[in-house]
Image 1: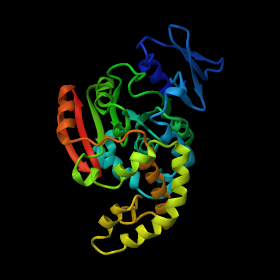
Image 2: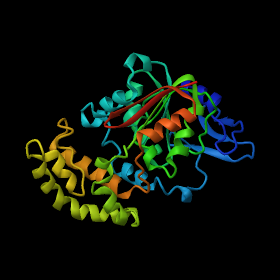
Image 3: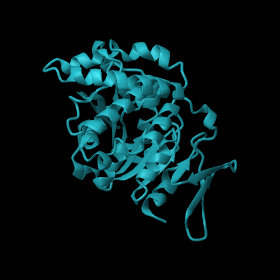
Length: 329
């Protein structure tokens, strides 16, 4: 039994009633399944502990499972040859790499593992949680990491005991949940006393909400995921070259691109080659069009929530996204 499995046997609980779980193994000690007190079995498949009971209820994250299955490695630094994910990770957490060593970390909404990969590289022990099928993509991407395990589960029904993790982070996720406040408030209980919590949000301000995205979403969120994908495949080759021309205009190009209904990172990620810039544009435009929920937040709201759950040393900073950090009392 490896280190992380031993840890999981101590911190996992049934996500629906918080009862203890029974862990089953094969004769050679391989992790096989988990059984709750009602004798319902949660399976371990392809390196993922799956706590979902009914896939039909998983609708608000289905677009993410769809996109990450199509682009499983796109945002991994190990794939792009850049430090884009690493830069965002350390900017958000605001910790030195040395402070991650041997820390037990929960990556909430792990996606394909772009941030888990960074934490693992710096010596952390990481549990990645995702409600979508991206949990399986992440497990595949990080299958050679001994200190990682992927869990498929719901942020509103976390399968962890209270006070389990040294660090919990949730990056690029909360705004895409049905109830942002409730989702945030599920996280502090699983952080250890004096442990560290870091989350980020889209910032609710005129610059954010006045763009094209929230206009086009009136239509695209009513379509099927595959329909959105088909429309994007038709429009992106037409609009993207126009966007690139605008992006090249000195000083104002970056701002002019915002008037077109696709994302363009030409001025944001010069590390990416032309092909990857285009691929990232398609990926994140699909995200913007197809995600079921997209709820930016104000600084006032997120600070109020943090105080309500008794976080201390609360800090809010805009580093790409609106980041809130705090320690659990």
